[in-house]
Length: 413
Ligand SMILES: *[C@@H]1O[C@H](CO)[C@@H](O)[C@H](O)[C@H]1NC(C)=O
Ligand SMILES: *[C@@H]1O[C@H](CO)[C@@H](O)[C@H](O)[C@H]1NC(C)=O
Image: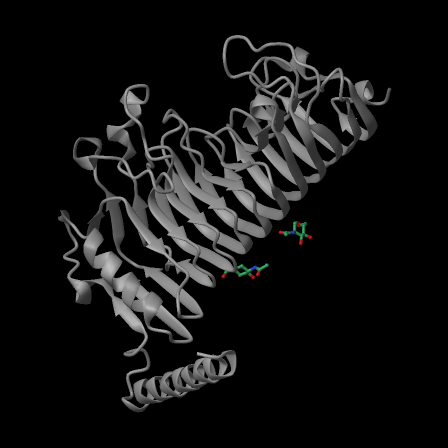
């Protein structure tokens, strides 16, 4: 077939497609039920929702119907008042529909360890959304993702957990809002390779002692808003990893947990870049750390233009940390080079700490020092009998300090 004929046929198909789409929308409207053509209820696809039968197949069918319908917008809905047991599942795009809303009003529960079976290596998640553009996963504050983690936590060294309960991979223009996430096997939510995301009003909980149950992990993503979330978990509330830029985080209540972390960056000599991070108006309650930047020795790249402002600590341990000698093992080899940390502002950080060592602890690389580190309006008081240690310590960290309790003279060298 010659190119002109081919081009004309493609045009004809597109034209037919758009006429068909218009008529479907009109038809749905004229029936008077506003959503009949665009809403895909999982129970209409065979989901039972008794908490015992695996409903994954029905969810996949509802998803495929919504994804392939080719409507401007379509919705998958998980109704309230039911508990849907779901084995590892992948909601794959690209979709023909221009935007898809996944509405979660009921509970979605994972299989416990003894019934989990082979782990899903495809994305290493319990629930994976992959390459879906214009996706909204939303609830009214009552919908739940329950990872059934307690059956895994005592055996972490023996069993390979799914790394993430809910993972968004390469989903641009993403919205996640109004949901509860609890007791994931390992991390709760992953945002990977997603540009333009708005994450809000999430409630993420797991016991403070549950291993590696991060709230939200971000990697290789740009232009994100994360706001109005409550997170109480056994590890980082939010972790920002390599390849991430332009992230605004605000109004997060964190604790128990390990605080908000950038890194760890530069593991195994890796080159990683993080820039343009603003963490604002957050509260840390009894967290193991507050705001932390951590990198391995021997890495490369940078973490720059980072602002922590208007942060409140309530009995937080280690409120402010930069650690370029991150070493979660017993010992790490001494290496030359590091991820360069620069342009970090701490503005208006207040409250109380139970730190036994330093309140502000900046351990920067000997070969790649931290530069342009700015402190202003800091007032963090010791409580719990360690008042004598309410100090700032710096190695290889350079910048300015204004109105700081404890004083941060050590950075002005
Ligand atoms: C993000 O979504 C929330 C809730 O839907 C909304 O209130 C907020 O304005 C959005 N933020 C941005 C920056 O779009
Ligand atoms: C943070 O709090 C300040 C002071 O209350 C307010 O002016 C600012 O708009 C807030 N920003 C966000 C993103 O919540």
